[in-house]
Image (cartoon, rainbow, N blue to C red; front, side, top):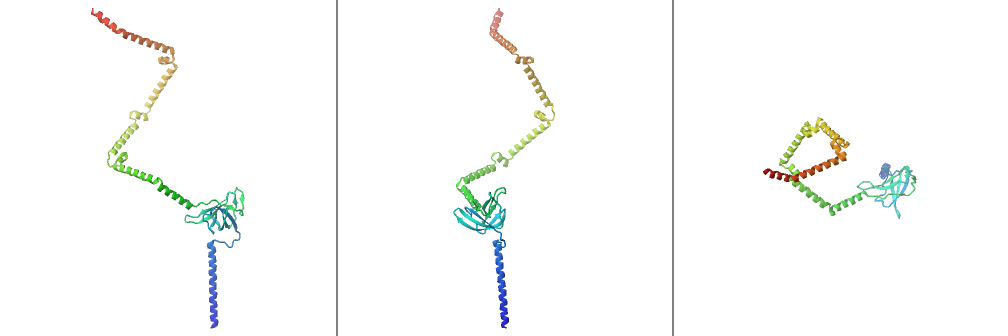
Length: 299
């Protein structure tokens, strides 16, 4: 009986011990998974980056290269030249002289990660054992908060609110005028159809005019019609005027000689002056001649 009891106790202890071992192994496994540690990888690479401000970067945050997480942040050291960030990578990087290392905001809800840009392939290489220099971080959330505060101050302390009030008042006044039927647009929107009828009559008149023009009626219609007779007549008239001006320019004809021949022009001018003098003399002697005729006619 005693042996059976001892065997039963021993069996219970073995079962409990095995269960505890399994629990510990499971906890260790999930701890490794959640911490993203790879204890089976011995090939690890370390980098050290100096920042003026790490902007809330925490131990255990990811190190991202080309959008892929390849390591994590191990720790920090505060020194006179800045905050030294130590990180462990799962693979080596081919850093170039134009590399960049920056602290990036993971989301608006928080969280940070270390982003590494290796640089251009045509630049000289930089060893990973070199202390790297990170870029000054910028906080997107903080910048957004500053912008919102600036907008708030502009709305409350500036003239934006007053300008909006004035604009709304002017819009309300325009709406009231339209509703009252004032102005051209108000009359168009009002229940009075007089302006609408006038516009309809005007449109009908314009339609009639365009129809007549399309049929070739009237002077403008003839000019726009497919019949080229009026156009040909105008072309002939222009050609005739062109010939006349060419003849005058050549000195042909009476008018051409008057324009070109200076002597003829002077002679004609002298004749005109003499004719004008004769007319003036006739006007002066006409009363005397008339009086003499009347006087001697009486006897």
